[in-house]
Image (tube, rainbow, N blue to C red; front, side, top):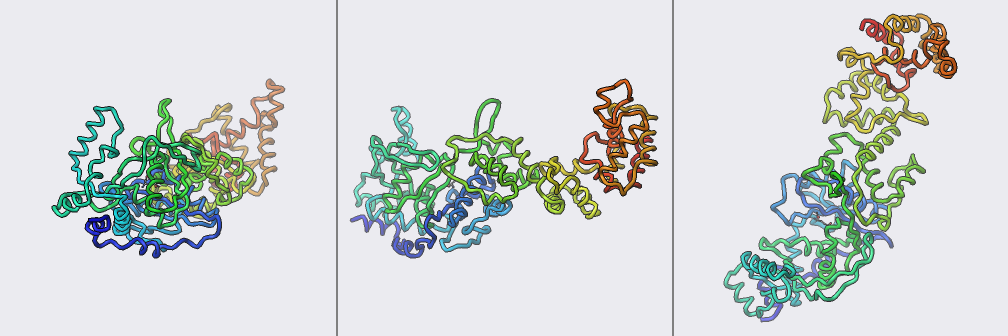
Length: 551
Ligand code: GLU
C-alpha cells in the first residue's frame, strides 16, 4: 500500500487538483490591484463588525482596481438558518457595499470563481485533501469522540497543551496497511493534516495591521475534512482563498492566533499565502469594562438596528471609516462635499486595538449627513424608511408633498443648514408641530418664558397680526417689524439696550419674539421663525394665534 492507493481508497472520485488549478486561472488585474473578500457564515445575523470588515475590504479593492467578493462559509451546517444568505446580501446592498462577485441570493452567484458557497465546494476540498494524502501530508483519523475527550482529560491533568499533536496524535502512527484495513472495515474516520511543525520553533509573521509577530510553529494535526465530508474553516480558508486568488485576507483578529496554522497549510499545499490584515473588534464600554459588542447584549451590534432606527447608511459608513482611519475626520472636514469613496483608506493606519463604539458620535455624524441633503433627498429617504416603520409619518409626508418639501426645506441648502435630525425615527417628532393636523389634535402646551401675562400676550399677538405682519416682507423687514412692535409696547428694540438700562423697559425684543414663537408652534425652540411664517401664510398664523389666546 502506498500513499496514492490510500488516497484513492478514501477519495476514489476526486479529481486531480490540476483540474481546479486550470479551471480557476490567475485574475487578470493590473499591478497593485488587490482581491479581498467578506466570508460570513449565514447565521441570519449580520454583526456591525462584519459590516465594518466588508466596508474596509470593499474599499481597498475599489481603490486599487481590484475585486471584492462575497463567500458564504456554511460548512458548520448546525449554525445555518433559512434565508441567512439573503440577509447578508440585502444588508450589503442596503449599505451600498455590494460585492463584485459571489453570492447574490440564497442560490445564485455571479463571477468566474464559483461556487461561492462552501457547501457546494465539497468535491474541491476533497480533491485537495486527497492531494495532501497522496503526499503523506494528511491521514485518516479513527479516534472516536470519547477517545478525543480522553486525550483532552489526560492533557488537562498533566497541565499541558490541549490538542492532537506529537505523541497524542495516535492515528498518525498507523501503517498505511492498518489505515486501509480500518477503512475497509467501515470504521468511521475524519481526515487530519499531518503538521510538519514543532512548537519549540518560531515563525515570523508580518500582519498589515498588527505588525511583526513571532509565533511558535503550529504542530497540531487539525481536522481538515469532517465526518460529514465538509472541510473545517482552516482548510476551506486555504483552499478557497488560493483558488479565488485572494491577495489580502481582511478578517477579525480572533483569527490571528490561527495564522501559524494557516501559513503552514498554504505552504504544505504548495500555495502562495495571502497577506493578512487582522482587524480589532468594535468594543463597548460596559460599566468601565471594555468588551466586544455582543450579539446577545447590544442592540447596536446588529446591522438591522441601524436600518430600523433610520440612521442614514452613509452616516454609519462614515462612522466606521472614522474608527478605521483616524485621519478620516480631517479629510471629511476638508472635503465636505466629496463622496466617501474618494477617501483613501490605509490598512496600515488601522488601530491595533479595538475602538470603543460611540453612539453619540454616530448620531452626530447622522446630523451632519442629513443636514447636507436637499429637502427632496430628505423627503425621499425619510419616506422609504417610514414606509417600513411609521405609517403616520408616511401620511404626514405624502398628504401634501409640496408642503412637506417646504417644511423639510426650512434652513436647508444654505451655508449653515439646520442640524437637528440625526435619524429618520426622529423626524416625525421634529416636524409634527408644523402640520396642522398633528398640531391641533394634540393637547397643546404653551411654554411662555419671560412674558407670561395673558393679556399682555394677547395684545402682542393681536397687534402683531394687525399692524406688523405682512406676508410679502423680506426677512430684514420682517424682523424690523418685530422690533417696532416691541418698541410700541414698551420693550427694548435691541437686547443690548435692555441690558444697559433694564429699568427702562418691560423686557426686550427677544422676549417678544418668544411669545410669537411659542404661540405659533407651542415650542420655545424651532428653526427660523421667518421661514415657518412664510410657509404658513397669514391665515394659518392667525388661526394658531387664536388657539393660543383661547388657552
Ligand atoms: N467565516 C469566518 C467568520 O465568519 C470567516 C473568517 C475569514 O474572513 O476568514 O469568522
